[in-house]
Length: 570
Image (cartoon, rainbow, N blue to C red):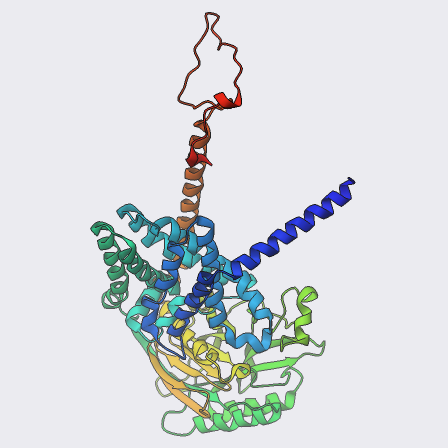
C-alpha cells in the first residue's frame, strides 16, 4: 500500500475517533450539570447581587470535580465549569461576538482544568488531614491562576474576577488593600474549599481542618478592616460627573454635556473638576478649533476644568479613545486609552477572525492604543485658602477599570483620585453596566484612593478610599452627580500599591511546585510498577539460580511457564 494512502486512512481514523470522543463527552449528563454549576457563582455579581453566594456557590462545582472517576475527567469537568462561568458572566457580549462568544468561553474556560485537577488530587477519597490542608492552599491558587492569566491583555483582559462580587462589603474589601482583588478571590475560594472538605471527609480531623479554613477565610476581611485604617485625608475636592444618556448625534451629545456642566457650577459648592463620559466628544479637538474654544470658554466661566473624552478619527483615518483635560487655555493634558476592548474596539487576529464583523457588531476597524497609563495634573479653582492648586488624577477609560495594575501605576505616580470615563451604550438593559461600575470599588480599596466613574448612559458612581459607595446613577438617570471626596496624600501607599501582584505570583509558585511534585510521584509509581516484572516475564521478586560459572543457567521459557501479570498492572 502506498504511504500516502496509509496516511490518509490514518488521519481519517484519528478524525473519526476525535468526533466519537466529542460526542461521547456531550452525551454525559454530569458535564452539563458542571456547566450549570459554573454559571451559579455569577449570581453573586450585579445585577443579581447575591454576593453571599460567592462564599458557597463554588462548592457544587468543586464537589463534581473532586468526585470525578479519574484524573482526566476531573480536568474536563473543570474545563466545562470554566466555560459555564464565562458564558454566564459575559452573556452581554453576544451582540458583539455572536457565536464567537462560545469559542472564547471554551478556549479561556480551559484554564479551569487546573482547578479540576487540584480539587481531584486533594479532595478525592480518602480526604486525609494533610490533603485537606493542601487543598485549602492549592485549589484557591489554581483558581487565582485563571484570573491572573485572564488579566493579560493577550487573553482579552479580566472580567468577573470572583473577588469583585464583594464590592458592597468594605470590611471584605480591606483584603484588597493588602493583596489586591486577588486576595479577596483567594479567601472566597478557600471558604468554598473548606466547605467541600467538611462535606467529603469522613474522619473528624480533616473535617475540622476544612471548617477552620473556611472560618479563617471568612474572618480575614473583617480582621484586616479592623486592624488597618485609610490614610488620613489632606484636603477635600468636589467632582462633578455628567451623564447625558444615550444620544447618537455627536453635536447634540456635546450640547447636552455643556448644559449639564453649567448646572454643576451653580450653588454654594460648585464642582472643582467635571468629568464627562467616554465618547462625549465625537470630533477631533486638534482640528475642530471652534468646539475646543467653546469648551475652553465653558471651563473658564465655570472655574472648573473639564475631563472630556474624544472619540474621533484623525486626519490619517486612525481612531483612538482620548481623555482630554480642557482648561481656560485649551488642552491641558491628554491620555490615550491603552487597553482596548477585544472585538468591541479591535479584533484579535483580524485576518483570521474578521468574518465576525459580518454576523455581529464587532469592530469594523482596529483602534490605535496609547502607550500606557500616566497621570494628569488638573488646576483647581482659586480659593481664599490656597489661591489655586493642582490635583493629580489617574485618568483611565472604560474597560481599563478591570485592570488592577493600571490604577496601581497611577497611585504610585502621585494620583490622589482615579477617574474612569465609560459609555456602555452598547450593553443597555444588561448586567454589564452595574458590573462595570462595581469594579471602581475594588480599585479604590486596592489603591487607597477615591474613584469616580462617569458614564454616558450609566452607571456612574463614586467610592471613597476604602471602597465605600458615595454616589450612584443608574441607566434610567439623566443629569449630573456632584460628590465631595476626601483625598489622601500623594505619597500614601497601601500594601498592594507597594507589593503589587505578590498574591497571584505566590499562587503560581504553589501550582508549579504541586505540578512538579505530582509528575515526580507519578513517574516514581510508574518505575515501581515496571520494576515488578522482569523482561522475561518472571516476577521481580524471584531470583535465578546461579551456575558454577557465575551466570544464570540457560533455559527456555514457554508461555505456559511465564508468571502471570498482576491484575493491578493491566
